[in-house]
Length: 194
Ligand code: IMP
Ligand code: MG
Image 1 (tube, protein in one colour):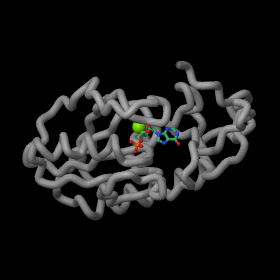
Image 2: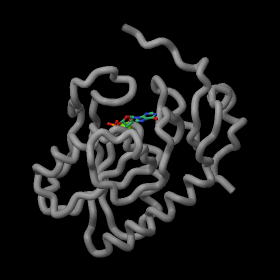
Image 3: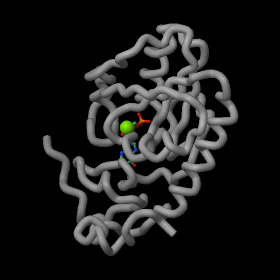
């Protein structure tokens, strides 16, 4: 059983969903498995988990207590790429890490890897700070959308090459609070602003 409410409880938000692709129960179970794997692999390493705001918040919040070894956590914020950015102007760092990562074992935690462009930029940035190791943990992966090759060491779920919402993922800042992941009904999408 899920710790969250059933889909109907999210009224208006669930009404915008055409199909649930991954249920809250499935996500909760998978996140526990990912936490176990990380605990095993990073035993004795005191890794620093780095997340990118805001999409990663629900995943990070569930992943942290699923890890049973000592860890630390920090966040970055960016603006730029993403399905809604509608440009190829790159990524701007809005908020940097609070701690230096030189010599640290860094695990980069992402909500979804889509084209990989954002992640590729961030990994290059972090690598230049000389961490002892740098790996990637993503809850969702759309490998068929990839434009650039990037390492992905821990993957929760493979998704179809479609736009999804829920569990941190938004459409125009909404739907992040859904505990499941689904496809939006076509009528929910608004025409892009010029
Ligand atoms: P990428 O640079 O194409 O890999 O995508 C980076 C960002 O785009 C992700 O971290 C998400 O914030 C956003 N994104 C990618 N796919 C989706 C989606 O299906 N729904 C909502 N946001 C998405
Ligand atoms: Mg994101």
